[in-house]
Image (tube, rainbow, N blue to C red; front, side):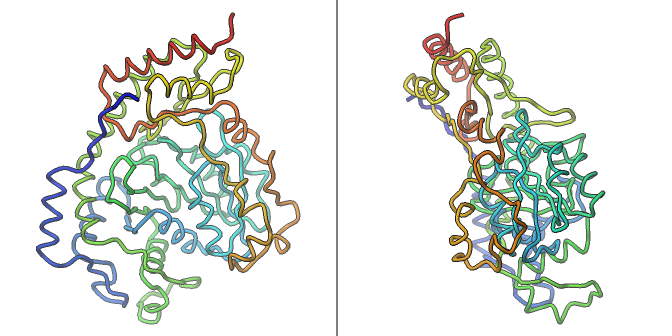
Amino acid sequence: MREFRKFKHIGREEKRVVKQVMKSSLLSGFYGNWGEKFEGGPRVKSFENDCKDFFEVEHAITFNSLASGLSAAIGAIGIGPGDEVIIPPWTMSATAAAVLHWGGIPIFCDIDERTYCIDPNLVEKLIHKNTKAIIAVDIFGQSANLEMLLNIARKYDLKVISDSAQSIGAKRYGKFAGTLADIGGISLNYHKHIHTGEGAVMFTNNEDLALRLKLIRNHAESVIADIPYSVSLTNMVGHNYRMTELQAAIGSEQLKKLPKILDIRDWEANQIREELNRFSEIIMPHVDAGNTHVYYLFPMQINLKFFTSDKDALVNELTSLGVPGLSTRYVNLHLLPIFQSKIAIGASGFPWTFEKSRKDISYQKGLCPVAETLQEKTYLSFYMNDYALTKKDINFIGEAFDTAITKLSRPI
């Protein structure tokens, strides 16, 4: 296996601020009661202000993970038992788990074959009287079609949440991914473009939703009675979803590096595209109109008519030639075991079962044919975010593809 140099996220700047925090002995500034420390320590507040300025949003609220942030977002918009939330199947399990956490029911909508994001053309026919929200996942590095999704949502009085875990810094018509929906969020766990080990930032321009996110983040039920606000604060079951001062200090330094990191990813992706464009057998990533792409992954598809074997054979051949970081799978959440057994759902302790939901809900194979076909037959990817690629590395990838395709492709 060829050894590509690992991308080094953490440098002397992060080490310097971590030492400062350690010297201060204030590793977390949160208190679980209403007052000055309810929203965290000075580093958390500073990082949130940095994110507000960078992402051009009214409210940026830190969390210990995006799984926590999504759970808080679902709670903040008022999802309860039996409420339905439309989500794509191609996303991390935390997207669906956030809905389940509040007793909601995920309704899976197939994805766009080109962008891998939720297909907005299929969303409206899934809307039911129980539907309360749509989650758009900005998968692999670019935004979903938020304009169409928001138009549908406004028509039916729904909320939209964007899970932009993999698209930190991507833009849609000049606005950052994660800032276009009612609530959006980015992940800061260790294999994203920038990271704090674990962590996340949620964005909203709605003051009421921002307050709800902060409450759920920090033991909401213990402070509700003390809050001098007149808004309705129902559904506020709180947790400890708080970010530490160490994470926040690292986050502020990482954020300064994000523009340069995005430039590096863009150069690498353009070089890979240029190297592989000569192969009709491989379908290159599509970038939707108005989008920038930050290439968490470099997603591709094989053109089946050119191959005598399947995509696994191609990736096995490329791996044997020394190309690291390849995958032929993502995930189809609707086929996970938890959605295949009523007993499993009931045993998990959620306050609902499928019998209580409408009878036309199904999580069987065939529900999302585009996602399933990609998973089974055509999708492959190169994990870019792990490497600091050189032109020589990219040439090597191109040569390996040439050798593998020549061996496995169908004679014309």
